[in-house]
Image: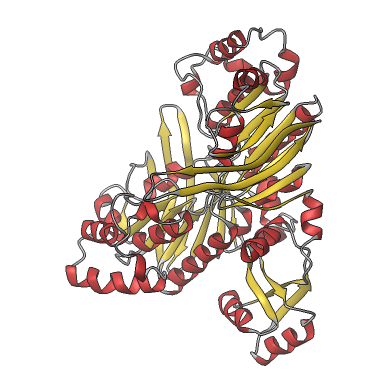
Length: 304
Length: 247
């Protein structure tokens, strides 16, 4: 059974004069126990989708179910069984760590003791500060408390809206390690992120841009469907190299990519590109590159 | 590239008995793109606030754009630009009104503002959108416009605090193109980011750990020193040593 089924969801904001369509007909399923990533930049529609699935916002069109329950008709059942961690810190700042956790456990008719095993891995890291007010915690600790509170009633589906935004590379890695361990407990996890490099840590991902799905697949499947030859080129003058690469007629697209520029070739024009760069007088290093999710995202943005 | 526009010596900031920035020293040259990296809570924001004249150091010395951070912080503010992911333009003003407002604050003449506004809008391909409200622009355009506004008064240095957070990959690269062009025109760029591929685009990178600068060099030499294939790996190797809790 699918944990989440989304069928042609449309969400519009604004008045008649200026309508913004935040979600333009989104459909996909998330399997039970899956770690599913929704990957896209700010304004793509990630938060709107999460708020619809957690019954906090009504869609204009389309249907969705979570754990078999309809997001409109059965909203009460859904609220009892999902966990939701919004992008903005939403716990009670003037309650202590422990009070926040007790509060959420009580609301869901459970106790911290009953489900402690589920949150132990995460909560034990902030337990030494259990008498500190939530508002006085550091960002990393707030995040761990929010995740503990979202988990304390043992939800069947966990929604995490941009848990790693603004978080440094090390803490992001640690957070994803925590998610992988949670998944092993059988919880279905939907997580959104603007960081493309996090896609590879999901079972499947939906790439989303301007309210539309660009692609849904396993991370490997997305990379495999890139379908064009990708090269990496560098020289001592990267700025002019990029301008010249963009003007080469063998080149479909060229963009900076870390130490190198990535070059998408129209067809197999590698030799022609080399002689073009030699003609321009560049001393360059050129090698074949493996596309990653970001390369794919950019290619899909162009065609959509 | 030899003129130093930022000179920092043993700069330190304490909050009570907590040392947020602990004796950092470095120079930044004119026209350089200087990446200022570090984990959350490493002290980047505190250091940047001191360098932009918003916060007084506890000890140490620093000169920014030729001015002393203790005595001439108002002069510093006039000679730098600043932009962050959170800092945005006024949504309820038009594109042109925002430019006029910020340029006016920096004391630019009406004539300068008029002429340069057209130039900037042309460059951003926003000529047709000049009279539209900023809130109607897509996010990517807003960030590019915010950058243009931050350097409109032709500051010596621009401080960029995570300017590309949450921006789509294509716009993120267009944004870096603008950074390169600004640097070529002689503006020094001081930038923080959580995207490690962007660290590769900097001329030099410093990495802060627990209030200190643990490493500083070109991306190429950092990778060599730390025997890493990418800046991501360099960062992980250094930041994992941190003992301070992330903020």
